[in-house]
Amino acid sequence: MKPTQLDPRGPRFGAGITSVLMLLVIYLSLDSDTLQSALAIMSFAVAMFVIGSVLGPAKHPYSYLYKFTLRKFLKAPTYLESAKPVHFAQVIGLVVTCSGLLLHLLGVQYALPAAAAAAFLAAFVNTVFAYCIGCQMYLGLKRLRVIR
Image 1 (spheres, rainbow, N blue to C red):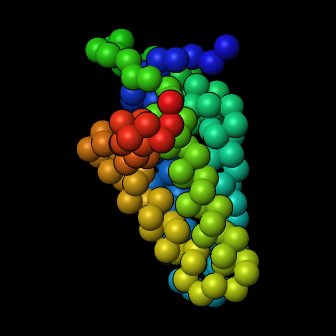
Image 2: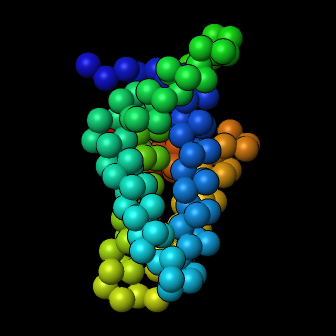
Image 3: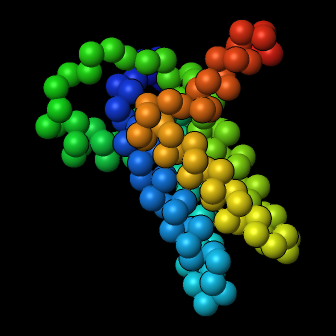
């Protein structure tokens, strides 16, 4: 049974990690000498999004990292949020990062830094402003009755 409610600070913590990783990918992918490192970091990010997409946000490694480190020092959350929009956002993150990685491997120039920049923007906005773009996409599609 998947948890239906999450502490909203957990996904924001994970988004902070993702934004740092994506900044590294952007920086490292623009130099051919460090491109392999950028590919390794992006592959790691894709793997994290796969875990979040398959197992859900409560089972994500960043969620465990948050729970067993930072959460101990914080007060209880003032509200909980639904896990469904966060799960959808993980799927969107997977699509963006995996597309960039695959397009790069197919030879599309600048696909890797472009995908990393898009993922960075979404993760940064979530981390700093507590505004999850993927979650808002989920809610919009739900209002339009594209998803239940």
